[in-house]
Image 1 (cartoon, helix red, strand yellow):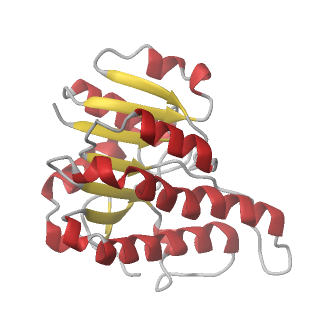
Image 2 (tube, helix red, strand yellow; image 1 turned 90 degrees about the vertical axis):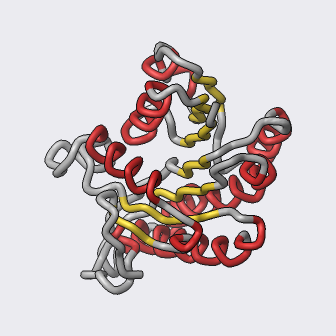
Length: 225
């Protein structure tokens, strides 16, 4: 049975990942900071295991990895993310910026470092970092320093991991989920979580080792760094 671990699994895109993989018979490790409030996740049919996890807490991440030491993870999806305040030049909230970097940039690397053994044991050997095209330097249109920089840094983490894990046979990619109707994306967003995840799963299914280090849209289109 293939296995996937999803962070930020209690709502939005993360919840949709859990639903989608569980429906297809995968074993799903659904991680969320407030898992006790994740009623939809806990009510799902299928092989879904819920874990209370704050991805910014290194000890908690390490403990979870140790508790799952014998379990392979085919796909590690770093989905947990934080928007932070959208600020223009001269308005930057530096404390908020540090918090967003912890969640969006440092936590994904921490998860990979702690769970790399689990991924190596699997057949698929794939790490998916949910990024954003707002982190594309080439497409930058100004303002939104906090979120843009956190995702640009995540993309660099992806690229660096792709080189460092190449000899271990692990593929690492950044994926833009689209503008999705979630708490973060807002009600006016272009696509539903279901459409986003369906697209991402098609991209995932088609990935090969040569795609490692790539940055892709949810429809499979390569994006500029």
